Length: 299
Image (cartoon, rainbow, N blue to C red; front, top):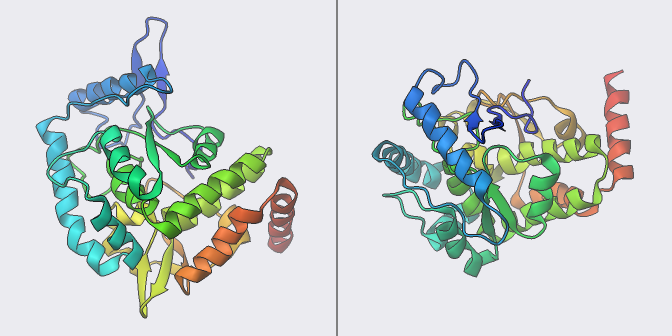
């Protein structure tokens, strides 16, 4: 099983300063030299970035722009059908371009007047503490590469489409923007790695892959579903379970496939009460007790 903390495509720098993104052997771009070189180039730009600097401005290729346009076109009607109302309202308010890929500073400029959120560039997946604690200050780390054009409907990694189309609209919404921030504040209270992993799994099964009943229908509020025009058509057929923080915080998951088990809330208010309540109150002591409770239930 892959966990969010694991680097699906680790990024390394050798003694000469050459940056390499290590794609798994079954990655869609593993045997595409041009794509591999492009991933290395974009990762290197992120690694050169420093706090207070402008985000790297990526000159996206025609193929990359076409992937963005394709995803935006395919997701538009699907969001109306499957996404929660607050996500759709935020999408209209932000007004991301659909004909081209915006650079991160442009996205930040659209978000900040609405919700105070902004983006920071990342070469790949960011260490748990760094990623989650940045959320407390309403800053979200994002990659800038684009998924391989052969598989635009889904990516096992968090590319700019996932980070901006999925999370960006959530960050612009009052409810989900606050939940992201509360997760960051919780992460700053947690010092034990195992407790932070528990929090990251609750985040995964809510803000990444959460579902909820709204207006009598099952809808999605998780960024992983809302940024995948393949998975958004499939999520209603998965195994939906009631919100259970202990189960969510200890469940394994595989980032390389559609999520077979999802956790459904009965209302947006229940998401706020249960997930938000956990983020708002959790401590090392309380999370450790929940982990012990999970082990006891297994016995």
